[in-house]
Image (cartoon, rainbow, N blue to C red; front, side, top):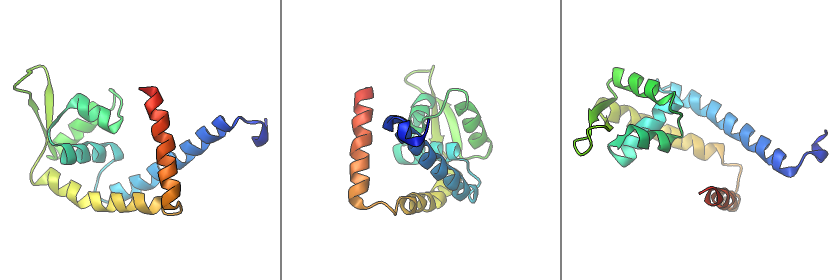
Length: 145
């Protein structure tokens, strides 16, 4: 089947995957300068922005699988970037806390570079292109809920 015979939906899926994979590869290189993986950065950024969260909340925010989140959390704990504690309201839940100064320092150092990279990665799109793409993606997300 040649490109013209492929349904446009498959072409879109392939293009979206290529773009996301390319951005992920490049972002991984940016974050490696701070000794972080994309998953580790996601956990730190979620805690930095939202404050203390349960393991499940962090997992949903960073789109991680149940298999990888324990490893990410363990590695961040070993480095002193986060702490885990039991939720006083529900002793069955583990809460995650961004440590001060280690965890806060590394995310505050990495955050501007990562955000700047994402902005530059999408700089070939006009503001109108970005707004249209965001609207289309939100439309897809809203039908999934």
